[in-house]
Image (cartoon, rainbow, N blue to C red):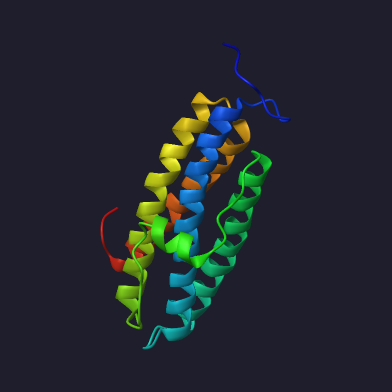
Amino acid sequence: MIAQVNSIGLDTDKSKDLSEKLNVLLANFQVYYQNLRGIHWNIKGKRFFDLHTKFEQLYDDANIKVDEIAERILTLGEVPLHTFEDYSEMASVPVGKNISQDENAVQLIVDSLSELLKIERIILNASDIAKDEGTNSMMSDLITEQEKTVWMMKAWLNEPV
């Protein structure tokens, strides 16, 4: 049987599978984004000014990434998730509620990014098998950037990577 291809030349079944995995990533990124907003708003203490600014940078970046992931799903011919109900059901990123202490906030970022990295590596492998360079490149870029952020946050916490 010959595989059907979509308008960008990718196998439609593999594209659908990748879109499902990307929707899982999207749901998790949305929770991560909300976590960042929460810690940005609620951070307290002597490191307030530095962390408030850093958390804003991170949530601005996460907002862009959410849009890019959703657009990739659309590019593959599928529909991105777009309700909080879907995000809550699919997300495995920890939810940070009422976090105002600096070390707890930074640890939440590390824990969230560690979970995102697991999902992104699954997608990276699947996109390689599907010969989907667009998704593959996106995952490579996310992984590289997030690994560096984890390293920096762990250095701030004075913990080994």
